[in-house]
Structures are given as C-alpha cells and as structure tokens.
Image: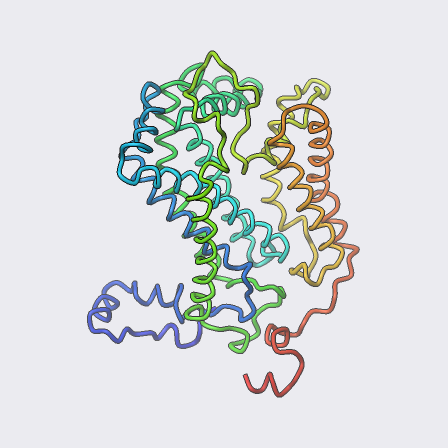
Length: 424
C-alpha cells in the first residue's frame, strides 16, 4: 500500500541520513505513518477511532506509571495510599482521575472501533489477522481493567474481585484450584492485591506489543474503507501525512475536549460511590456491579438462572459470557457475503442496528439489580446476541441481494463524470 517512491526515500538532513544508513528508523516511520504510507482517499471520521485508541493507551501508560510511584500494593494501606495520592501528591487528584476516566474513554473508543469494523466488514479477507489481533487487545484490556478496578481496595473493588474470581470456581475439577491460585488464598487479600497490581502494571506493555503487531498486520493489506472496494491504483489513495494526520488531529481535539469536560466537571460520573468506602469483608454491598464497560457481559452471565440437565446455571453463565467474546474470533468465517461494507447490504444493515440496540439493552440490564424484569430481559437479549452471529448473519450472507458496488474508490468519491476522474 506504499507509493512507488516510498522505498527510495532518503532523508535530506545529514544527521537523519547518517542515522538512516545505520538504523533505517526514519525510513520506517516515513513508510509506516508518513507520506510513504498510502491510504484510501475516502476514509471518514469513523476511521479516527484507531488512532484515538492508541492515544488512550499512551495516556493510561503515562498516568499509570506515575501513579504506581505513590501506590501501596498492600491490603492494609492500599485504600489510604489512593487517598494520599488524591490529597497530598502534587497533581495527584488529576492523575488519579485522568487514569480512572481514561480507562472508560479507552473502552468507549475501542467499542466504537469494533462496531465500525463490524459494520464495514473490516474482519473480512484479507484482514482477518488484523481483526483477530484486535480482539486479543480487547481481551487484554478487559483483564487489565478488572485488575485495575481492584487496586483502590474499596468496597466494590473487594467484592468485585470476590465475585469475578468466584466465577472460575464454577469450572468442574480445576475451577477451585484456579480460583485459589488467582487469589493466593481463599479470599481476596494481600496476596491477591499484589498479584493484581503486578499484572495490571505489566499487561499494558503487552497490549502495546500486540498493538504493534495489529498495525503491522494492517499495513500488509492496507486500510479498509467505507465502500469495501479494493484499491485499484494510486488514484484511489492519498498519503497518510498530511491528509489523515490532520484529520486524526481534529478528531483527537474533539476527544480531548469531551475527556476534559468529564475529567474536570464529572470525574466520578462513571465510577461507583461504594468504592470510596474502605473494603470490608464483613459487609456485602446491596448491589455488586463491575465497571460499566463490563455490563453487557455481566448481563449475559446473570441471564442463566436454572440448571440444564447436570450443568449448573453458574457454569452456563460463565461459559456464555466467555463465548460471547470468543464468538467474535470466528466472525470472518460466519459472514460469507462477498460484499464487505454495510452500506451496500440493506438487510445486513437492519440487523446490525438491531444488534446495537440489543447490546445497549444488555448493558443497561448488566448495571441493574439482579431482579425481574431485568433478568428476563437479559435472557431475551442474550439469546438474540448469539442468534445474530450464529443464525441470522450466516443466513443473511446467503439470501441477501447487495446493492451495486462502485467500480473504484475514485468513482465512489467523484462520481461517474469522466472529466472529474480524468482531472485526478
């Protein structure tokens, strides 16, 4: 996907030329994110969220490293160390709120990035590896976020750790040993806090490494585009810099404005008030919930309220929760339609919007009490979620009549006028 002259790029500055001859880093950057990387000319603002995800990761790494300098990973002082950061460390309140809300914004942009990929068929050949590596990043994010939620050692941190690690206990034979190994004992305590802190510190760097693989895999086939039509030649592309660096810069500015509004005017809006109460193993909160970005999966977990033959309801819920994510790994082979973009798939588009509503309902039920009518709604929504991918999508792929595709990206952008195309 590079321009023909990209491989012959030579720095003009003597120092950069000296570096490039011995370590071709300037050439690599030029071909990876500079003018040497050609991208489809019709990318819209939905393609901004990949860059925003990378920015959110860097934000979490920087704030997390600084917070770790003041945090005490000990059950006796963890809660007080967080209060110390908030009250005594210069700018500590800003760092703590930036990190806590940064996690929420990280998930927001990643969820939009995923659903953009679902709508525009970014998981289809030849980009299956890009999609699979993206899902690995998502799983690592979920593990990192869960462990980070435990670290403040408030009421919701403690009981969230107890409930989530307790899910492994539902696995026959090996479940209880795994749960004990995760916690370092029979209940969340000092050993669990140390383990979670170590992994929470380590996993973001693993995420960064997989992000590099994700970008590398993307550069082999090149970026997808809203039409789903393959690039036919140089007339269908523009250099990544300055066209999309400017566009991404605008998107980043909007992101930072919204992020700053939440950070300064509603920093606890996305958190839970019970987490400002020190962890107390003798006092169970009235309503235990994870962070909001886990709510759809939590609703699927709680949707199973009865045993099926000899399989306990708890185990069914755990299997369904993990299956709801693992299902996405086989999505490239479930959707067999030759058309990528949802723009040209009218029937697919209707069911995609239903999926969005379904996931929103699951999210609402996941944050609601485990009582009726929320449990029944969760059961219906969970059933539809699995039906969408396993039944509806394969059938739609076979019976749908897509709309006519443009002959090229240039035609989709400029229309059919020969003069306009020739002017390019």
